[in-house]
Length: 279
Image (cartoon, rainbow, N blue to C red; front, top):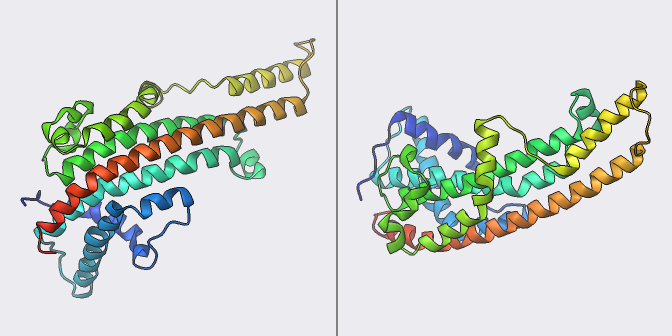
C-alpha cells in the first residue's frame, strides 16, 4: 500500500469531520429510519472501525502529550477513504431531510419577520435538492478513487472517470451507472442554478406568484376581474406542495437503493485493503 502524503491541510480536512463524529464512540446508530440502512451497512461500519475511531484516538493522544499528530500509512489511507465517504453519507442524509424541510419550513412568525414567503422557501429547497442529488454521483467517483488508490487528483475526476478500467474490473460500473442515470435529469438544472443564477420553474409556485401579483393589483384598483380567495389560493398551494414533496421522497428512495448497491460493490474492495494492512 502506497498512500498519498497527508499534508497539514489534508489532516485538517480529515480531522474536522472526525471531530463532528466523536459521538460515534457512544452512538453509531441514526435515529432516522431511512438512514439506518446506511448506519448498518458493513461499509460504514468499517469506516467507523478503521478510520473514525482510530484516527480520533490518535488525535486525542497527540493533544494529551502536546505532540504533533503523526499517522501511520494505514491510518492515512483510511483517513482519505473517510473524507469522501463521510461526505457521501451526509449527502444522502440531506437528500432525505430536504423534502421534509420543504414541507415544514420554519415557524410562520419567523418567516414573516424575515420576509421569506413560502414559495421562496420551496424554490430554495427544490434547487438545493437537485444540487445535492447530482453531487451524490460525483462523490461516489471520489470514493472509488480513494478506496482503490487510483491516485487521480480530485479536481480531475469528471463523469468520464467511470470509464476507468479498474471500475469495470471490480464490478463497480453497473451501480455507478444506476446512480448516474437517476441524477442525470438534475445535472442540467443544477448547472443553471449554480452557474447561471437562474431559479427553478415550478408551476404551482409561479401560479402563487401570479395570484399575489393580481391580488396587489386589485387592491390598488389596477385589476377589476375576480381572483381566487386567499383560502383557495392557500389550499391549492399546499396541495401541490404535498405532491412535490412526495415526488422528491420517491426520487430519494430510488437514489438510496442505488447508493446501497454501490456500497455493496465497494465494501469488498475496501475490506480487501483492510486485510492487507496490519490494523
